[in-house]
Amino acid sequence: MFDNIKGLAGLTGIMKDLPRIKQKMEEVKDRLETIEVEAETGGGAVRARANAQLRLVGLKVDPALMSGLVVVTDPDDVAMAEDLIIGAVNAVLAKAKERAEQEMQTAMQDLGLPIPPGGLGGLLGG
Image (cartoon, rainbow, N blue to C red; front, side, top):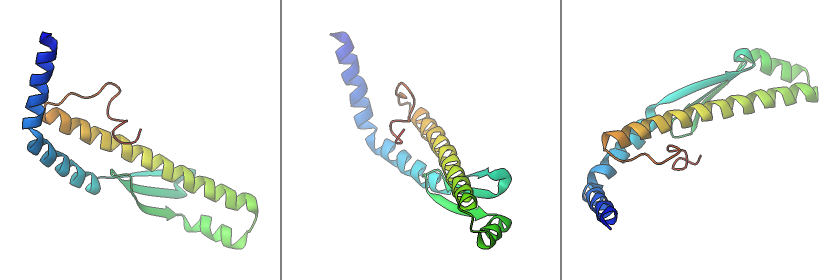
């Protein structure tokens, strides 16, 4: 019975802090847009950049790789280039998600909020 009362008191405290929590989450959301991470595949042949909002913001393909595709139309070469691009994009989005989770965890700790079991992956689409 007393555990339920403690739980209610904690919920009341969180509800009272809702404006501060909302403001902090907006600050984190804005900060995530400015944080960028980079990943590469093929020894740097393909480089991808994403922000911590999981948005691809840049993609560079080595000109040598592209010129090879223009001259050589071998389907295996095209498939390799596609695989490198997919790999770079997936790698950078994984890094961006990790960074976003770190930022959210820090914000929750700053607010004194409990972090759910398993971290924040579920909150960020994990």
